[in-house]
Amino acid sequence: MPASMYHWNTQRIVAEAFAAGQPELQTLPAHRFDAVLKLERRVSHDGFVAIGGNYYSVPDRTRRVVEVQQLQPAPA
Image 1 (cartoon, rainbow, N blue to C red):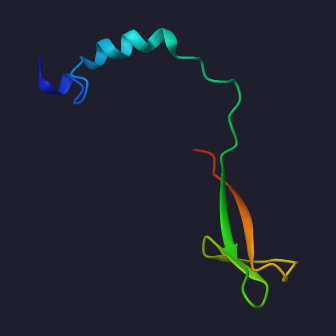
Image 2 (cartoon, rainbow, N blue to C red):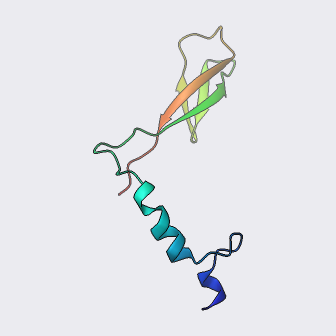
């Protein structure tokens, strides 16, 4: 068999290892999980945060750093 058929670390045949692990795999859930990216952003002196090249106003200027949650776009 070609060397590419063997896993580089375990030296097992990849297809056989996959077949052996197949019964342990669970089905995917019916709904999609919302992927959220959490970022920390510093509030500028005039009350804005920069996210992805855009500036957004922040109502509370007393905090210097805020946490931003950005939803990931759905695949096309």
